[in-house]
Amino acid sequence: VVTEAVVEAKARPEPRVKPSPTGRRTVKLGLLGCGTVGRGLLELIDRNRALIEERAGVRFEVTKILVRDLKKERPGVDRSLLTDRAEEVVANGCDIVVELLGGIEPARTFVARAIADGKSVVTANKALLASAGAELFRAAAKTGVRIGFEASVCAGIPIIRTLESGLVGNRVDTLCGILNGTSNFILTRMTELGESFESALQEAQKRGFAEADPSLDVDGHDAAQKLAILSELAFGVPIDAAAVKVEGIRNLEPEDFKAAKELGYVLKPIAFAQDTGDALDLRVHPAFLPVDHTLAHVRFEDNAVLVKGDAAGELIFRGKGAGSLPTASAVLSDIVDIARNGSAPFRFADAPAKPAAPDGHARFYIRFPVIDVPGVIGRIATALGSRGISISHASATLVPGKPGHGNVKILAHDCRASVLADTIDAVSRLPVLAGRPVAIRILEAN
Ligand SMILES: NC(=O)c1ccc[n+]([C@@H]2O[C@H](COP(=O)([O-])OP(=O)(O)OC[C@H]3O[C@@H](n4cnc5c(N)ncnc54)[C@H](OP(=O)(O)O)[C@@H]3O)[C@@H](O)[C@H]2O)c1
Image 1: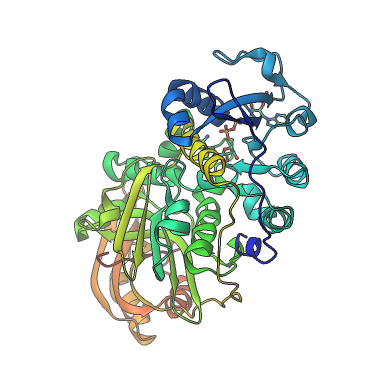
Image 2 (image 1 turned 30 degrees about the vertical axis):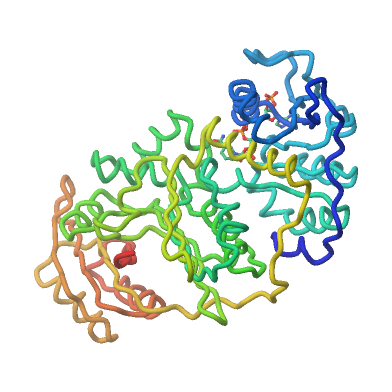
C-alpha cells in the first residue's frame, strides 16, 4: 500500500502558509467529517491550543468542515464552519485536508481531489488505505504532497511514526500485537467473566466498540488490514492485506477459556508478522499465550504492538486503539508533523514483494466436540498419532445441559499447521465427532 509512494517521489512544496498577527504562520485545516474523531480533533485543538502551537511553531485554523447532516446537534462546534459540499472544504484555500469520514467512497474521491489540488492529507481511514492506498500514495508522490496515516492503526499509539522514523536504523524482522480492540474486549470478558461470545459481543456493541455488523472485527479482517500496513513499514516491501492468513474468534467457547486457564495460558487475538528473509509469515488468529507473556496483560479494548529491532531490541507499545481523543491525538501528530516538516516523503527500499512463508512448526491446543462414548479419547489420540502428531496432554469434559455430549481437549506437540489441519479434517469424519474441532496455536514466551 505505502511502498509505492517513494517510487516517483519529487521535491515537495511546504504547505501554503501566511503569517498570523502573532508572527506565527497560519496553517489552514479543512475537515472532512465531524463525527467521533472529527469532534475529538476540534476538542483537542481547542483544549491544548497554546501548547500545540508552541510546539508546532504555527497557528492552526479550521476553515471548513464537511458533514452529511447540517441540522445535527454538535455541541461546541462553530456551525458557521459546517458545509455539506465537499468542494467548499477541499477547494477553499486550506493547506491540509483531514479526512475523517470513514469508508471508501466518497472519501477516496475527496482525498484524490485534495492531492490533485496540491494538498497534503491526513487520514484515520484504514479501509481507504487498504483499498485505494497504492493509487493515492502514487498520486501524492507525483504531486509532491504527503498522506499522514498515523491514526489508521492503533489510534493513539504512535506506531506508524516509530516504524517509519524511530526505528529507521533497525532491521525489524518480527511484529506481534493485539490490533483489534473489539476482539480483545470480547476475549477479555470471556476469560475474566466467563461470558459467551454472543454476550461479550453484545456488551462491546452496547459500549460502541463494535459495529452493528461486527464481522470485520471478529473475523480478523480489521487486524489483517492493520498488520499489512505495519508490516509494509517494518519490512519495506509491498503487502496486500489479502496475503494475511486470517482466523476469527467466533468459534471459541467458554470451554476453551477454562482449558487455557488450567494449562497456564491466556487466550488473546494475535496479529503476527515475520520476515524470514525470502518470505513473509503473516497471520491473525486467536492464540494461547503463557500468562507471563507481555501481551497476556493487555486487557479489554486496549491494543499493543511488540516490535523487535536488531539494534533497539524488543519494544512494546500499548494503549487505546480507538476512541475520540486517542485517535484525534494521532491525527494531530500528523498535522503538526506536516506543518513543521513540510511534506517530506517516507523513504522505503524499493523492494519486490515477497511470497508467503511455508507454514512453520507450532504447538496447538485442539478441542474436539464428541459424543461421550467409552474410549473416545483413545480413538482421537490414535488418529492423531497415526499421522505423526503426538500429544502432551489429553482430557475430556461433559457439556453441561447436553447429556451424552462432551469435549476432548488435546495439547499437541510441535507440528506443522497444514499437517494438523489435514489431520483434523480426517478426525472430523470419525463417527464419535459431534461438531467442528477448534485448533488454537500456542505462542511461546515473547
Ligand atoms: N472512532 C474511532 O475510535 C476510530 C479509531 C481509529 C480510526 N477511526 C477512523 O476514523 C474515521 C472516522 O471515524 P468516526 O468514528 O469519527 O466516524 P463517524 O463518527 O461515523 O463520523 C463520520 C463523519 O463523517 C461525516 N460523513 C460521513 N459520510 C459523509 C458523506 N458522504 N458526506 C459528508 N459527510 C459525511 C459524518 O457526517 P454526519 O455527522 O452529518 O453524519 C460524520 O460527521 C474512520 O475512517 C474510522 O475508521 C476511528
